[in-house]
Length: 337
Image (cartoon, rainbow, N blue to C red; front, side, top):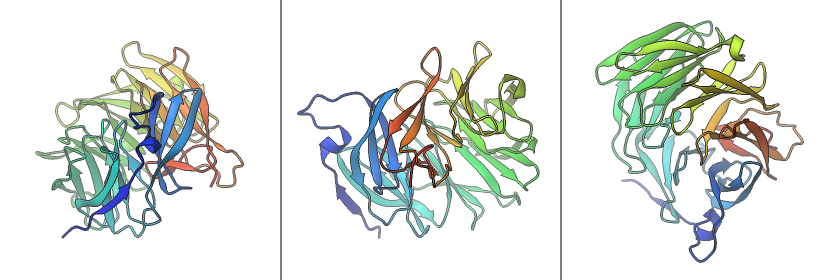
């Protein structure tokens, strides 16, 4: 029998007080300092962290769904994945069905589905219809011996992309109801991402300094290189689509830049972020992202970094914060522990 943990959340803490005039909200992030989910209010260039939902010391981090009122979190011991839903203003935390053990977690672009790879079982579990808690679909990876480096899942959960590597080179696979299919081999792929409500996806290849567009992943799976070092790709570590699927944002470690790729125009705009953009979490808007990083823990900076790709000239701005926030298990760039 599942044990349900209920946290009472003051509605004003997450900007849901119907008796007040609410300002613009960019989204949510997990804050390691306060061990809770915090609201990001304002607009790019004038954003701030607000008080939020305390989750206690039992959780190590949380993976917040883009523009949704729920998150998935591993417990501190790594024994169970938990579903945290604060849609009604009262946060209910319950074990995610079937998720026992340490896993590599990926949420779909719109938060409708999630996938988690469990190394101990060499298996991926896929949950659909989130935040409803339902029995997951299982994907057997016993045919793959190399360690998994990245996982992505489409919004309806029908297609999962898996990247593996032996440390020198790797392969991207598509997993569907029909089984596993190899899509590309020979690179190092730290980041995979689907477009919202689509089977189109991107893969970042650090070995070749390339960004690869995969049309109809798991179907016809047509691959093409949409950016390389000539367009500013330099050891790409993260990649994500805009909400409308027309842009791809790529985080580069070698150049510490964010690259916005216009898929229709075939153009690229590079923006210096002076950070390590190892993870991108989409916020409210079309192409606005919180930047995740394994930043220097001794950094004296008290701000975190936000990328505004909706502007005609993409820009990076800082969100003042007295504590460190994290997204997808990574530190937010510039934060202090």
